[in-house]
Length: 131
Image (cartoon, rainbow, N blue to C red; front, side, top):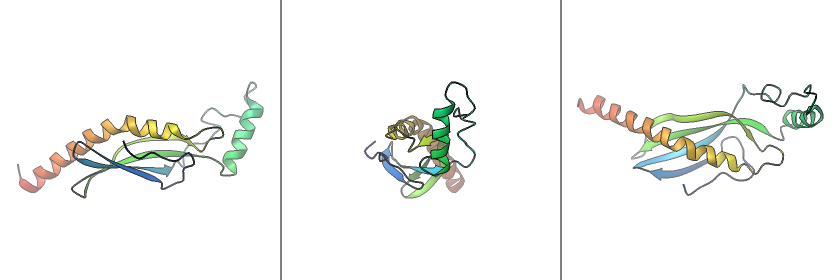
């Protein structure tokens, strides 16, 4: 993969690369379902309550957010698999993080996206060519 997400990322940021004849694009989308209290940052936790309170306040102030990484696959500029692979509930711009995990997620999603893209392309060819 040639491109990588920046140390500070925003909703809608995307990276692109080519693999196995496909053009792949990974983009960051806001995860509306995840909340810090549910994802292990409960301010009522007796061991980490104070730390979790700071984390929750930073989330409420939009200093960081939960996101999903969604990979779309194209073949000859035709979108063949819109959401070929995705992972949600990822902490983005989390205090003390450099967002390198986002790039690790993309690398892990690549093989799943290629399988979905290959299947979608095969299906598209079958429907168009009848073969």
